[in-house]
Length: 128
Picture 1 (cartoon, rainbow, N blue to C red):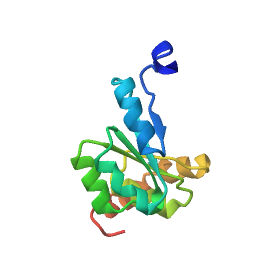
Picture 2 (cartoon, rainbow, N blue to C red):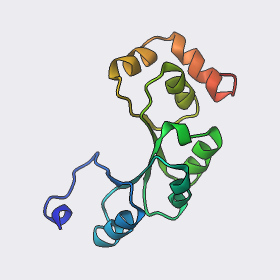
Picture 3 (spheres, helix red, strand yellow):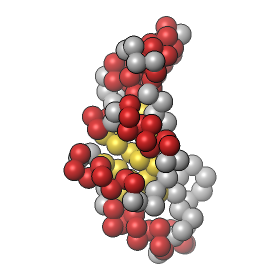
Picture 4 (cartoon, helix red, strand yellow):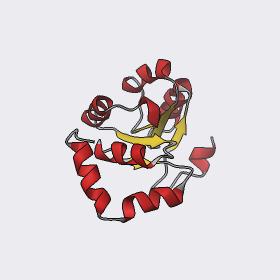
């Protein structure tokens, strides 16, 4: 298997939309950090059963409650594809662990100014 010949170094996550692939990878390569990519509500139910460290969810599936459940399970949450400032701030306020965007300039601008820190804090308190 390619992962055995060329093990990923620090900072890598091997991810898939397919639960079966992730289960197989865990059996074959126990030390590899895995992530479940999900863009459909019907597949979201699998996250609890999968041997993954990361959930990489389409931002439209993420709620504050789900964010808390994922973190309480000891997993990291990345949101994709977040291309609107309001969504970026809301998700940051809910303490997602990472934001993936097609608009990296907007993402950088959104979090560059100190005024946005207040908006993120308000979102954490449920005020945004």
